[in-house]
Image 1 (spheres, helix red, strand yellow):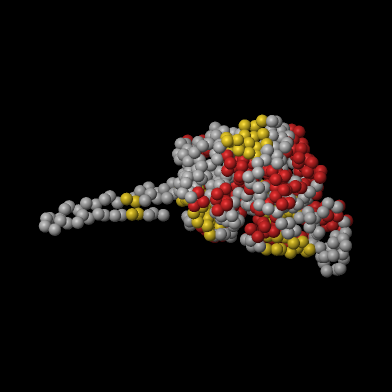
Image 2 (tube, rainbow, N blue to C red):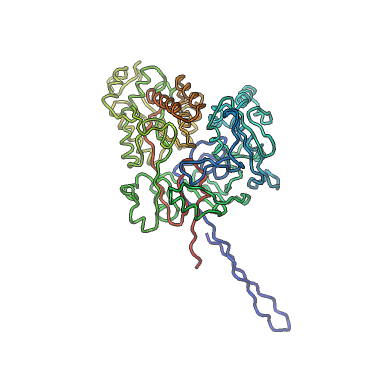
Length: 604
């Protein structure tokens, strides 16, 4: 938006002499702001690292809060580098001790909680921020990442706080997490975790918060984020619009990314941006537009600078044969198409009395339901070919992913599904045309979903699939944040969602089935001792062939017991107007806003 301030100053005339020549100041215009504008297809839940898990809330939070580490924006394969830390962590004691040293001179955005003083980031802020995930008050959905690693003493502190039913004892020092001095802190684990430092490269989880802010707004942490990152929250209309603006306190942070020499576009971006102060834009405006048609039109009309993950409905118009349409190319629109590190799936609640359980008939039911659903039709009709079939829970580009791995996960076989249901007693006992449970009670599935167009299309696919095997299915419709809350509480029978990668290790996807992660990553609440044992072994092993073998066994258990019907790994097609410069989709980095530029029109 152009804000012009034009002023002129006329000198007063002396009473008995000729008027002095009129002097005018040159017109001074406030510089045009560089504003990045685009849309989320799903509403956010809030911006507190200790309470959020959904992609869109985490994207905003990662641009406000900073973890000690981050990823090089342009490097492929992904490479971790320091962010607020002065260097990568010092790792010792066979991967059980990590020491992080924080750079001096990093400051939080201004806030009344700081009483007018500039508030420097210290090691104690990271100690406090990690402890918040253990505070039962916040029910952190990310706690599993820390508890699975076994930070010495913190889980015990959490259990004591739960038993005492009092406030969490933040001032109690534990052996596994403590500040060594103003700028250094250490983390000690009960067992080796060679890849544990990846957790400290996610600002949406490990971003530093200031204790004064949390205590000043004890019930508003989700709506009052204050971090050290390049942006601060300026406006927020829940489920409608999120506006971030440049953080005036952000440090001197020059663009210094290091792409592979084999990636000419990334090399060109690095050469153009090198040395420029981050962030490159002044403001980010994110609209929440759940329906695909208005989101697409907003991009076409130039209201948005990009459309992230082109809606599948428009793939044939915008990218026929996966190439940019000529009419868009003429407008200077450009395209990036890359595989996502994600998996789309429907989970079956393993504690639910209808679809849950580990007995042969319950396993047979889930496998039959999964086999009756045509994942390839979902890819061709719903996703318009913008995905590849999934064979297991682990996504591409990660350790543990095998392109040649084949399994029942992607099988579509209606006759076999019917036979399996017949064999285990899921037959129509009352003659109403629908199958019943083996004990004679009605078999009715309840699939939770959202009211948007894509979700409605998926509901239709499941309706047809279940109709083909005479299984009644009903749909429970609610907004995404409501479904997420119910899912964490274990109140849903089935829910169709996606899981996105946060680091290069496939272990993060095995988290979806690890028993102790119930209610956090493990929404299905799958809890199989054999799987848990494999998970715990792979978590402490170094990368290599032996670990890959055990990860394959873990994946196979996921196929056999079918807590998740994994359908696809999506491919993202992002379209950008020519004014958006320097964009490159990263597989894990959420805080990419600082690295892109908006080319301003030439002065008239």
